[in-house]
Structure formats: structure tokens, C-alpha cells
Image 1 (cartoon, one colour):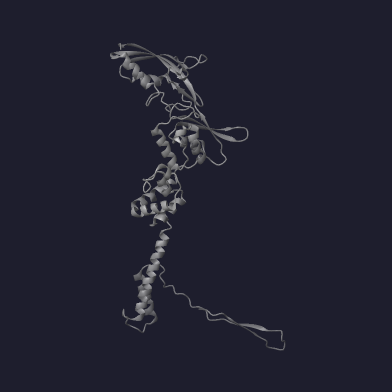
Image 2: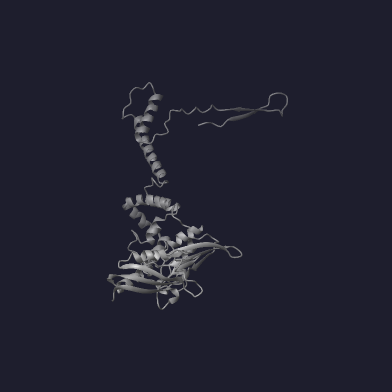
Length: 398
């Protein structure tokens, strides 16, 4: 170890104020040799290196045995360095997702990129939280929950490997609504929304994002919702997966109140979003159908009502027609002529509901625009939502 330099003052000559400062510098430290292998990591490497160094420093000694004190010290030091090197490697490995082996390390690394594996498992009541009730799963993570999750991961290392793959993939998941396409895409992922259309409008002081939606069934956005148990379970699962608030089913929340937490969580701060309903345009049609001689008219009437109905697969099924999608008579001909027992179809009337709109049976085209969506429920109790007049010719009676 280098010593501190010695400083002295000498006053030689006739002037007592003229001193000379003299410094006696110590010998310089010897240069470190370049023969040290900094990549040594294990017991054999450390032991061999120290044995070679010992032989180089004492060349006059030709024989070394395991019983020598120097050799014993070398082996003890090599063992200690091997343990330290292993600890260093293990500690460094815990800092990377690919090499982390401890559950708490991997869980924290995943959380850094926004993938809360433990929280997601609890919200979805996945293992090890599968025995929790619905109310318990909605509570925040406790220390006991985290310990249980880490222990379960320790017992199931294959689940940790799966999390290493799922975590980075989740980075590419959309977690915000910024562009208009984001609003349309994200809202259509919600179980209550079939179609969404977004646009931006200047309201005098700032721009407001307006989003029109078509719900999963015919209802207003502010009407009390009559949800089936299956639909509500789907909504609850969707909100739990995203960690969103879900209203109570018993209160029959409206579509707007169910979607509001979703919008609030995903929209940008300071961005105002207004939900609106579609402008439903009732369609009036008069059809004349020639029935094959081998079919009953009642069968054809029922089949026509199904393919032009609002049920699953029907032409006017909610969400099948997009916002502003024009209605073409050729599409109606296609679905009707595909029915067994239909020989011919004649469209006698084809128009919007209302006396001020002309009949488009000759052109076969009803133009729609903006938020307009064609509807035809064919319900006598609600004629304003469109209806069909059907005349059947030929076939068998009954």
C-alpha cells in the first residue's frame, strides 16, 4: 500500500523568509500484470490460476502436494470464490426476464411492463385463486395473496415459462383510446356493443369525440337494461379482466352506465367523449313471391320472416348493417331466391318509412348516410320500426 509523501521546508541562505519546500515521494506501485483472466468463474479455474501464480513466484520449489499449507489455502480460497461467483451470477440473472428463476423477481419484472400476473389471476379467479368468491376476487392484492401466488409459481415452473411469453406479448395490447379508430375498435370489443362509429366535432371551445354505438339488442342507451345471466356474466368477465368497475346487475344499469367506466379508463386525460345512439331508419317493403307447387305457403312465409328478421343470421339482425350502409334490393333478392321453394320474387314497394320519402322499388337502392342504420322489425306493435307486406302466389295452401 502506498505511503503518504513526506514534506519538508528548508531555509538555506541568508533570508529567513525564503524557504524551499521539498517532497520525498514514495516508490510507485508496481504495474498490475495482464495475465489475470477476468473470465474465471468456477472452482477449477480459480484453483488452477492461483496454483500457477504460486509456482511462478517460487520457481525454486519443484514439488507441491495437497498436504502443503499453501495448496490447502488455495483450495479454500477457490471454493469461496466459486460460491461468490455463483451468487453473483444468480443475482445478475434475476434482473432479466429470460433468466429470472425466483417467482417474485419474474412477477416484478412483468409488472414493470404493465403485466400484473398475480392481479390478473385474482380478477379472473384463476389458480391459485379459483376458490375465491366473486367479491373476494375484486379486492386488491394482499401480502397473503402474493405469497400464495409466488408459492404456486414455485410449484408450477411451467406456468412461469408461460408468463415469460404472455408478458411481452401484452405490451402490444391496446390500453388506450386516442384515434377515432381506437374508439371504434375498443368499443366493439365490449360485449354490449355490436357496431361503433366515432367522429370528432368542434363544440365551440374544444373538440369532442362523439361515438355512436349499436347495442347488442334494440334498446336506448339510457334505458334500464334487461340483461340475461349469460350476457351479464360475459360483461362481468370482460370488466374483471381489465380491472374495471362493474355496476350491480340488480340495479338494471343502462348501456351508458356500463360503458362509462370503460371509456374513462381508456380515453386520454382531458378528452371528452360523448356516447350517442344510432339513427334508426324504418324500411317499408312489399314483396310478392311465387311459391313452388311442392311447398306450402306457410313454410315459405315462415322462412321469409326468418331470413329477413332480426334474429341470429337475419338480414336485419342488429349489428349486421353498418352505419350509413345503403340498402340494395339485389341483396334482398339474393337471400330470398336462396330459399327452397321460392321460384320468383317481385319487389313492389321499397322505401323509407314516411310519406315524404319516395318509393325506390324501381331503382332498388335506398341511400343512407352518417349515423343512419336500416331497421325492419316487422312488428305490428311498432310499425315505426319498419314492416313487410308479404303476398304469396302458388304453392299449397296451409
